[in-house]
Amino acid sequence: SQQQYAMVHEKPPRGWWLPGGGIEHKDDTPVHGAIRETLEEAGAPSLLPLLPLASQSMMRRMAEEEPKLRLLPSMTHLLSLQQSRGRLRFIFRGEWIDDVGDCDNETAVSDDEPKSILKCLPGDEESMESKWLTWDEIQCLEEKKGKKGGKHATSQLQRANTSKAVQCFSDPYLRGHEPLEFYGMLERSWQENGSVPGIPVHMMDFSKEQKVQREEGVMGAFFGRMENTSNKPNQTLIVHGRRAALLVHLKCRLVLYDMNQQRIAVDTDTNKFPSSHVKDQNNVTLKELVHGMIKGFVTRSRIDDTENKKHYQGVGMLRVEHVIHANGREATLTVFPVVCFSPADGVHPTERADRTINWVSGEEIGDNLERNLAKAVLAEQSGENNICSLSILRDKEGPL
Image (cartoon, rainbow, N blue to C red; front, side, top):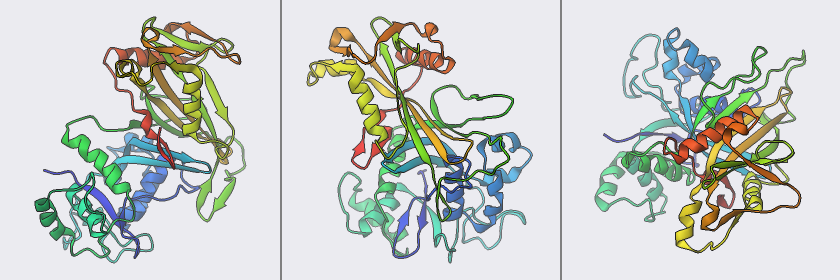
């Protein structure tokens, strides 16, 4: 069997691409925006009335009560966080169980269900149609546009066979490189029987009774919206049509772990992880912020020494948080990168005049979330967890 991936035939002459689009002010979180865009661009029109049920937390509570919820896609992992000045782009891995049928069926499975969860021709104002394609078929779409060869090239026999499946497509080419990059990432992981790339997606519950509820552990990508306790409706700062433009604050809370001493670095003044805060994402990129934090706290000597590099491999991303404020106009994006190093092998904490740090055990950290993240780092050193690569952070020039 082969993996199949949803591809959207966009309005001519744009070709085929991933389901996706802009986050709108009515979306509770980027996760909800991704689910809505997937339904609007790739889903059958009969599924659109299910959009109010698209909250993942609601889906878990109502799965048995509302069987139709199985027709909705779910966002399982964050593959890429692409942020440049003034723009924020989330690339999710989604799952969509298609046990309904296809557009060639004459009748639906039941009176209450569509004959296909995917959109069929002639489409609507969002897109023309959507299809499940294999990785080989996606590459044939790419080659139809003339970008032959390269790391995504298939064998001549594969191209000959799979091109027959796409030769009847209208506009048989890709709009951009993203299907090759991200579906290729998923395909390689599947073929190698590896773990799913990226970090798991979780929802944060901000309720009056409980300040923050985290049932899914501490590692992963967490999304939430604070409750609006005032009588005024939420208004976004800027609205481009239906799209929301939030003022995004960037935060980096750096986890430094000394593998020799089994100690975690905390700021002397706060007893928390060293951190940095930027009030407006137009001033700096998240990639620059994280790189500056790591460079400011860690010195790597003998950087070209191959033997030394293995002692600097404990670098990755533990946690990502995106929280929309109660006023509906701002959001805070916080990342928790980790650097595990061994001073005896050429990696040292940097002495800084503007900030001093203490080295403490995980249990001595006062903040509950940071204490649990420290425990997760220790578990990683024991081989119990997998830390996501820092390459998940990108800007226009590429990954970190």
